[in-house]
Length: 611
Image 1: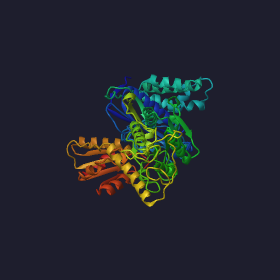
Image 2: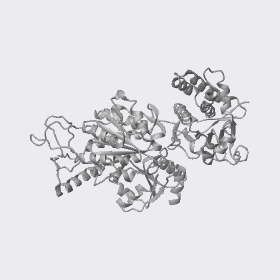
Image 3: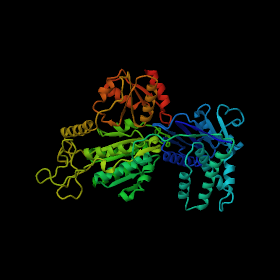
Image 4: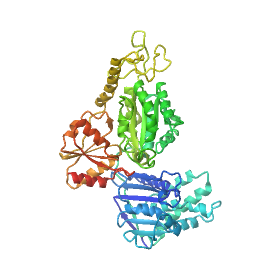
């Protein structure tokens, strides 16, 4: 029977299964094949925090969503068009999100009395009408995988069943016309050291693909043509990879050796892992005993003339607070990367939230202002971290860069920049005394930045430490007027950065009555929602903040110029509080703290309600 090939402009697919089913691996390989076709794409991994939650339970469900299209897209999509569920728990957790009439591919073998009980089903959803509103394809993936691997030496039936994620990947690859050789080549390379595993995964993948081609059950498959793109060399990156590359680029363009110290914490640990793979660029990484040690190591590296960086998430920031205050007093470059996650304390480590903004700006003792920069998209993490380094070096100050779990784990195509086109970052090390024969370490330049003298430089010996410094000389001082003066100088230095970061651009082609103002990873949702609203003939403006402290110099002018301002945030309204306090503008707030990013369709409704 002839299969029907149907063209689609955009598709959202979600893989879901137990956390031991290899769902993230299957999703990532599908994304890699999709990127090579030339589709624009954004992904959304979603997995439990536990290393191994009880198999088959609702707490152990892992999912990976990918949105790909033949046009420019900005978000991982809202409701999936297709869902692959490997067991009842995966079905129960993800079915509410599947669009009505959507494609539902079920691993029929995964639906047993035991797994149904673990998923807290009172009846079998395959038989009780629960799935009547969907296009259901019941495929015995586990048993078909075992049959496909029959005869492979050293592979038992139990081991073979573990390859069912590749069967699912092969089937979905056929359904959406993804190339076969991309995945088979990757399997051959990845599992080259374990030939039986490689053969089993290849057999499972090909069996899934062949099933799609031959089974009468599946009559329609889909094609999504490549998206238009500017000339250039592209690769897929997630936020972690883009941040690592941005740090390396900043190291190269500044001439400062890169040193990163961190203590393992989800999801920030991935940056430590990623950078440790780049020793050929002179990168040095250290796994410290805790966040206090990590931040002090990074600050010590800065003191010694390195690009000192530390990375953490949520509670780790609390432990770094004292060191960041020390860096404020020492006035040395230090980059602190906070990959935000959901909740106080341990919270939900693998779920996203952007609720550390107020902590980043204010969360230290004393008057200790510092610049705060936020990334907007996974790929834009490269520019955000490069800019953070630029500010830290230029102004001799610690800088906090805010990312979040969604940005760190999600991926999208990225046009590689020309390395030679990136701006130089001049460390401007002090080389000689600046007061006759003496060196005064707190003599400031026109930006109020003090000189950066490397330890051991002849004639530039000076006192460092956390006690208050005397203006210019750097000697320890308890004098009241000096403390007031130093407090004011440190604040003025950070405030003056506003003139160095450009004005806040506003996208408002036709004089809208409402401005949607965002920061961080809300960029995709805001831009997507604004496009939707405009397509319906309504006027709405958008602006996005990359510099949260100080804010761009025209921010007050922008927010005061609109009758209504809406601020969407993945917290309970932290930027809203800042804008209200700074500019006395009663902005509207749209918030979400569910461990998930804000989606364009829900923001679309919020915009229309306020127009």
